[in-house]
Length: 122
View 1 (tube, rainbow, N blue to C red):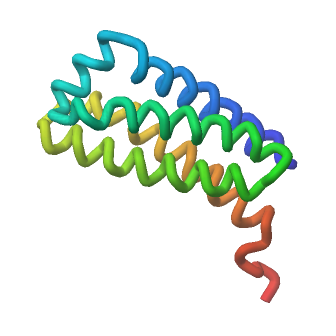
View 2 (view 1 turned 45 degrees about the vertical axis):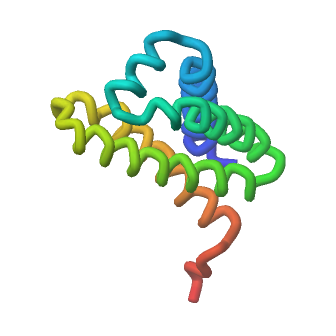
View 3 (view 1 turned 180 degrees about the vertical axis):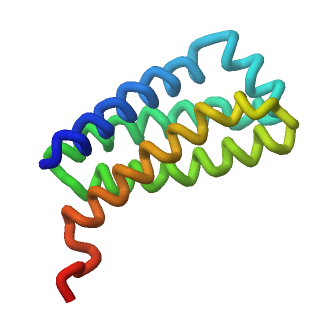
C-alpha cells in the first residue's frame, strides 16, 4: 500500500475518532451544535464519525471499508461547509472542514485506484 495513503488514512481515522468522542462527551461540542442550530444532530454526528474512524482502521485489512468511510466523511464535510456558510462563520471556520474534505477525497481517490474501480489502462 502507498505510505502516503496509509498516513492520510491514519490521520483521518484518529482525527475523526477524537472529534466524534468530543461530540458525544464535551460541553464545547454541545455549545457548537447549538450555535450551528443542530443540537439534535450532535449524537448522530459523533456516532457516525466514530463509526467512520473504525471503518478507516478496518480499511487496512478490508479496503472497501476505507473507501466507504472516506466517501461518507467527504459528504459529511460538504454538509459541514454548508452549515458554516449558512451561519456565516468567518472563512477560517471553514478551514478544518475543507482540509478534512480534501484529506478524505485523497483517500477515496487512492482506494478507487487501488481497487481498480476505474480501469486506467484502457
